[in-house]
Image 1 (cartoon, rainbow, N blue to C red):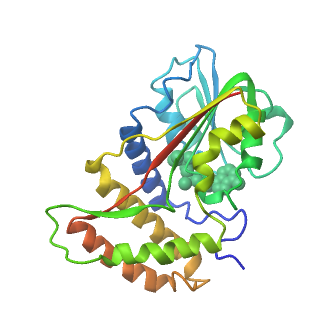
Image 2 (cartoon, rainbow, N blue to C red):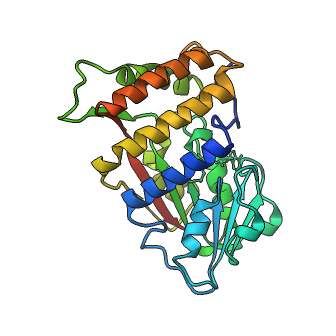
Amino acid sequence: MAPIREGEYMIQTNGQSISRLNLQHYWVEETLGYLLHPDIPVADNAKIADIATGTGIWPISLSRRVPSTVQIDGFDITTAMFPPADWLPANVSLRTLDILKPLPDELRGVYDVVCIRYFGVLIRDNDPGFVLRNLVDMLKPGGYIQWVEADIYNQRVVTSAHSTLAGPTTLEQHLEPWRGYLDASGLRYDWLKTLPTTCKETLKMSSAKLYKPKLLPAFRFTASASVLGAWEELSYKFLDDRPDEFLGTGPELRKKIAGFRREVERGAALDLEYYVTVARK
Ligand SMILES: C[S@@+](CC[C@H](N)C(=O)[O-])C[C@H]1O[C@@H](n2cnc3c(N)ncnc32)[C@H](O)[C@@H]1O
């Protein structure tokens, strides 16, 4: 059986996850330079959806940058990381939705923009088709999809010229079993690079374009803290109960992560490429 089963979310949804996701939000915004790609127009009466919204940080942040008449609805399979409804901006709502299931009729053709971010951990066998169809079905004619991902499969280790580390780091050595774990779960990120083609050829969208922003070296510590935090959450969520041939037991992985953190303190870091697809229905 695959280490991560179909539809399973590999990370936790607790207080630590909230901090990590919100950290990722600021890292990605700094890297991209925008929350919503400048090619996507936002009219005063626009309706915007954010799928798998997590903590709702994207709708909350965006609400501060668009007219207060723009309605932004965040959806997630769980409410576990949502702020209380009475703490949300007036034009933001957060609700439950399983985007891996057929779309409820009331959500069809409603939105001018549908955003999805960091959902690659649930895309199996390089096939985003089902999710993409749901996103397109949520759009009005002429509406836009924005899909943002960091490629956690092809991440690599870089070391500062000022690092005191010699030889390959244990962090670098860990990337091989990490890829083995993802491979065995059908979680490769090749689909990201062909997403615009899928939008145009399979979903018959009128236009689609891929953007690959330049990475900011000063954010490598942030990237590393985020990935190591996610691995730690995975160790608690899955490995304590389901030790794995690639990643071992929960305590084993956590011990390794403590070592990776020491290497990061000495100038090693993870680089992850970002991919942004903007497509119009
Ligand atoms: C890595 S987080 C991304 C959160 C958010 N998009 C962001 O950028 O901060 C992935 C989210 O997907 C949600 N999720 C997992 N399975 C889902 C499903 N089937 N439908 C909708 N959301 C799902 C998780 O609860 C989690 O909040």
